Image (cartoon, rainbow, N blue to C red; front, side, top):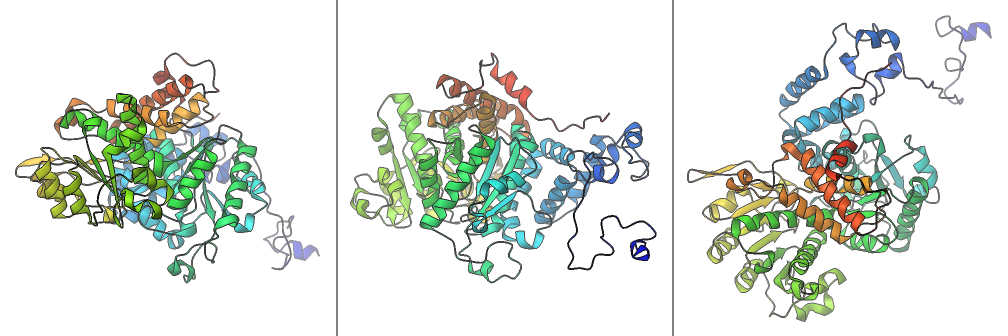
Amino acid sequence: MSNMNSIGGGVKDLYGEDSATEDQLITPWSFSVASGCSLLRDPRYNKGLAFTENERDAHYVRGLLPPAVFSQELQEKRLMQNLRQYEVPLHKYIALMDLQERNERLFYKVLINNVEELLPVVYTPTVGEACQKYGSIFRRPQGLYISLKEKGKILEVLKNWPEKTIQVIVVTDGERILGLGDLGCQGMGIPVGKLSLYTALGGVRPSSCLPITIDVGTNNEKLLNDEFYIGLKQKRATGKEYAELVEEFMYAVKQNYGEKVLVQFEDFANHNAFDLLDKYSSSHLVFNDDIQGTASVVLAGLLASLKLVGGTLADHTFLFLGAGEAGTGIAELIALEISKQTKAPVEETRKKIWLVDSKGLIVRSRMQSLQHFKKPWAHEHEPVKELLGAVKAIKPTVLIGSSGVGKTFTKDVVEAMASLNEKPLILALSNPTSQSECTAEEAYTWSKGKAIFASGSPFDPIEYEGKVFVPGQSNNAYIFPGFGLGLIMSGAIRVRDEMLLAASEALAEQVSQENYDKGLIYPPFTNIRKISAHIAAKVAAKTYELGLASHLPRPNDLVKYAESCMYSPGYRSYR
C-alpha cells in the first residue's frame, strides 16, 4: 500500500485523490483563511498587483505576483486601455465579466469612473447580445439557478448561496428578455447586469446582491435544439405548476432573508408580470422594473421636458405605441402624477392618455376582447387601425414607443407629430437599439430639428443643419439603483406608487439649465451616484411619511445618510 501512497511525487496521498479510481468518491476539502493562492483567487479580496510589500509577506503571496506594485488608479488606466482595444462590444462584456470574477473592487472602480462608456456594455444593448450567446460565452456560473428540478427544495438551494445577508434580489424567468423574446435560462445575464448597476450606480454592496434565474423551460425552438443550451430542455411550465414554483420561491426568500429583502422582477412576460406584482405587492417588498422602473424614468423625462415645451403635465395629450408592461405602467404613473397635481380623480386623468396595440387604437368598442391591464385605457372613439391614423385623430403632443418592435415610428408618423406641435416630444423606448421605434437621426431629421427625443438605448449626438442635438437616454438605470437604495436605507417593508412619483420628481430636479440648453431631458450619467443619493433620499422620505419604514429613528439629513451608506470600491488594507 505504501508505494500506492507515494504516486503523487513522494507526498502522502492523504485524501486518496491519486490512488482513487475514477468511480471512487473523494471529498472536496478546502481551508478557510484566505492567503497565498486562495487569496489571489478570491475576487472579493484579490487586489492583483496592488498588494503592498507588507501584505505580500503577511499573506504569503510573495513570489506569486510579479515584483511591481501598482496603485488601483494605474490598474484602472491599464484596464481601460485594454478594453478600448476591443472592436466588438461583446468582447468588452466578456472582459468585464472576467474582471468581476477576478477582482471585484477593481471592476466597480472601473465601472463607476467610466459609467457613460461602459453602461452600454454591461447593460442594454450589449447585455442583450450576451444573453443570446450566454451558452457559448458561459464560463463560470454567476448567481443562482432555480429550476423545476428544485421544486420543494428552494429554501435549501438559497442556503447554498455563500452570502447570508441579502438586501436585493433581481429575478427573471427569461421569457421576455429586452425586446429579444424568450431566452430561457440564458436570461441570467440580465439579473447579473442589473445588480452590478445596483452596486456601481446605487452603492448597494455587492455581497448583499443576489441574481436569480427561475428556469421553467423555454418555448424558444432554437434553444431547445441547441446542444449547448444550459437550461431545462422542455416547453415552459405554465398555470398551476408555474405559480406554485414562484410561490415557493417568494416564501423561501422571505423565510431565509427576512421581511425587508427587495425582490425586483425583471423581464417576465406581460401576463405573469402584472399577476406577480398584484399578488405579492401586499405581502412582500417587490418592484417590477419593466412596469414601475420604466414608468418612473419616463415620467421624470416628461416632468423635465415641461421646462422646454411649457405648460403642465395635464396640458398634454399622450399616445403610446405598445400596451404591454412598459406602456400601461408608464400611462398609469402619468395619470397618477396628473391626478396628484390637479386633484382630479385618476379615472378622469386617464382620458388624456391613449394606447395603440397590435390591433390598433384601444377604444371602448373593443372592451370585450381586451386583456385586463388594457381595459382602463379604452376610451370613447371610433376604431383606428394603425398608428399614423391614431396620431392624426388624437393629435398627441407626446408620442411614446414601448412596443418592442423596431422602425415603427415611420417618416409619416414623425412628420405628422411635427406638423401638429411646435416641439413634439418623441420617446422611442424599446431595447436594444435594433428594436428602437426610430433612431435619433430619424427623429431629428424628419421633424426638421423640432423634436425633443429620448430613447431606451443610447444614440450618439446628431448634427442637423449645423446644430448638434444630444439625444437623452430614458434608461431605467437612472431610477432603480437609487430607488433600491432608498428602500434599503429606510428599511421599507412595501413599495407604493407614491415612492415611484417621488423618484421621478427627484430625477427631474437633477436636470440642470446646461442640460436643457442641449435639449437634454435627463442629466448625464457622469454624476449618477450623486443623482442616486438624491433619489434615495426622496424615496426614503416618502417611505417614512407613509409609515412603511422600519429603520428608526429617521436620519435628519437623508441625502448625507444615503451617501454614507454607499459602497466604495477603493481597496482596503489587510492586516
